[in-house]
Image: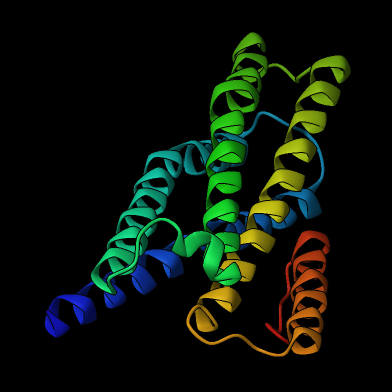
Length: 196
């Protein structure tokens, strides 16, 4: 059983790492933003294809994290009550649900509208300012939601470290502030020097 627990822990951690997509999405959209208008060129097609194409993998990684996390709880001889007994586990569970709901909203509501607006433009002609404004507003909403997802993923990773033995409350709060600052920085810039 120890081997199964070890394998599940590795799969759980790898899936969590692969959920870091919101960070790279923010870098990509910030790079696109630096280029400015016009909208509708091949770069926009590429960017939208990449963003749209990451939805299913994100759901798969989220399901993997959920499944392996619950399996680890059960293999430790605990039930779902552990989500209440261990606050870090419960918080991770809630944050995973939040991420799944935000991704679902983007997939069902935001992305189809962006696609419709791009499709409404005639090929080879500039996109009208009204359509460009609508696309930019939806992209901004998607970017904000990606930053919320990034903060949730980073918080889940921090809580994962303390799932079975918590940090002092003050340290958890300091780390949450640091994660929020990192997320804000990723939202605002391309972070050309990583942490620096």
